[in-house]
Image 1 (tube, rainbow, N blue to C red):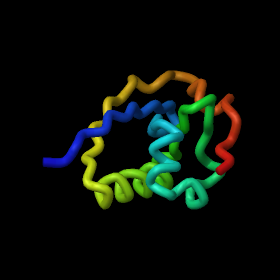
Image 2 (image 1 turned 90 degrees about the vertical axis):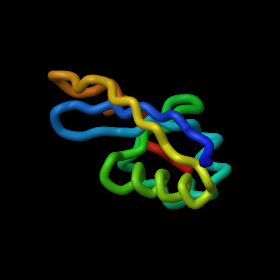
Image 3 (image 1 turned 120 degrees about the vertical axis):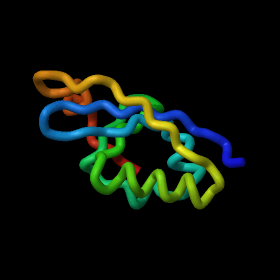
Length: 89
């Protein structure tokens, strides 16, 4: 049975991001592949939903994990995620 990793998806009217731990991205060895369309705050990374989040999920599955996603209700305006710093490996 695969170990379950919990992640939270945040979204607004235009886009969505999967919040994960930076340590896990580093452990998986995918930091250089994550685009600047993703954002970061301290040890949290908000992976862009179209390319970076699927990259993360595929890497997690290859490492023997399953990813359980909890969705946070979309906001009417822009999400706070858009105000964070763009991701840098």
